[in-house]
Amino acid sequence: MATSTVIPDDIKTLKSDVSKLKNDQGSYATKLYVDSKDEIVGDWSASWYQQVLPTSGAIFGRKLRSTHRTAGVEDAYCELYLKKWIDSPGNAMARLNLNDNGTNICWDSTNLYGGTMIFPGDSGYLKMGNCLMSYSKRGSNALIKFDYTDTLQIKYANHGSTMTLNTQGTAYAGVTAQLWGNSSRPVVYEVGVDGGAYMFYAQKNTDNTYMLSVNGACHATTFNQHSDRDLKDNIQVIDNATDRIRKMNGYTYTLKENGIPYAGVIAQEALEAIPEVVGSAMKYQDGASGSEGEEGERYYTVDYSGVTGLLVQVARESDDRITALEEENAELRQRLSAIEAALAS
Image: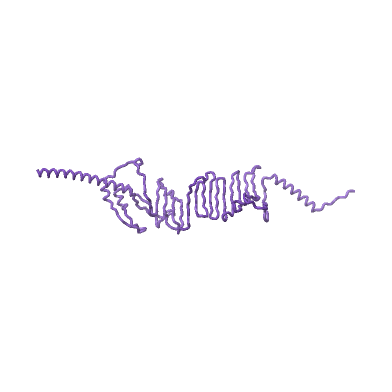
């Protein structure tokens, strides 16, 4: 008679667990995603062991990879891995790599230069670290670099010339360049001292004209402005220039805002004499530019090149009078000589 074998309950339980595990493995092998979350308590290590570190060549550690698939095709993934020996001292770098349908974006963190974060991409990279930042667009070979010499450089990689902005740490205040605008001043590019007045600004007006305002004296070898006849219409000689100039005087004066002595004319007098040279501009309190919405007041301005045109015509009228007097004087001398000759005979 056959003897039946009694299987312990724990063996039955084990067989059931193994069978369930096989079913789960088969299910996960064909699933495109996992419905529930997995949690690992403790460390998860993906290691690459090297007996001897080579003297050159990058070494990559094992990757932690998260993948997304659509209809069985991988269309996005994210990787985290370690890269050793990124430069000659053997510094290490951790890279987080994101690929979305073939477009690759990376974030790199390294101890190079005392700690650097790099954001490379297909068209360039951004690098930030211990006073180190650079951006490069590989397609155009353009390069922008800010390194630990406190210098910003903009350079075309295949050309020798470089534009450099440098701060030497010797200035007593910082400088800020800002771009702003409002309904009456659509575009303003302003450079000013931090906590102080603006130094200069360039402005586009609502009528598409442009202006440059300097908050102080301008020093230059020369100033030139377009004056070609072909650029002008309605050209007329300034009439009655002598009568006009008699409405104006030349003055010396000091400006109320700084007490510095100057010489020039008064805009209100110029307005009576030759209104074409008089304009206006806004001035704001305490050297402000109006960027913070300050209330300003409009004052007259004078185009001194226009005053020069008036003075030229005054000189021409004076020359005409002098020439006429000289001719009249010459004629009178001839008459006088003729009278003297007649009396002598």
